[in-house]
Amino acid sequence: MLVCGTGTEVGKTWMAARALECLRASGTAVAARKPVQSFTPGEGPTDAEILAEATGERPHDVCPPHRWYEVAMAPPMAADVLGRASFTVAELASELRWPDPIGVGMVETAGGVRSPIAADGDAVDLAGVLAPDIVLVVADAGLGTINAVRLSAAPLVGRRILVVLNRFDEREGLHARNLTWLRERDGLDVVTRPEEVALRVRSGATG
Image (tube, rainbow, N blue to C red; front, top):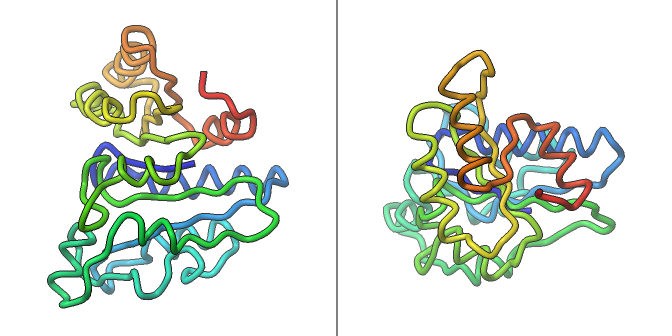
């Protein structure tokens, strides 16, 4: 499973971690990988630390220590600012290591679907290398959701996409309308809770 977002701060790490916890609680052997991460030191746990807590792994298992960049920018930009060597999508993919046995392996990208993840590519390019069974696209549930989801899903056509509307509140009319529109007019498989993500992953179906 590859986890992408429609942008930054949409909650993809939170959603991924909660879905992994659900899978783990059901007896599924899980692992998470964050090929590269950039962050502001001192502003709470990093994505790798959050994912490690959800899976029971070590943060450096989730993201190798040489891929931690202490500047809140797109990873290749952060590497440049810090004076470190540039890296490619192929290099990130080649560094992924998985435990054995494993039932579900999750790879989380950085930023939005088209945000640079390496010097030569983004999450779409990483998906091309990894060929994931499911691409999870996490979006906010409110204003601008339809546009953001459409733009993010378009370059992933041909892959099995599961859209998650994070922070969904069924009492909010706009949230409910966005959900209905994406399902009925755009024909997307859309869920709103991590338990639903876990169920889709366990069943191997995305609609």
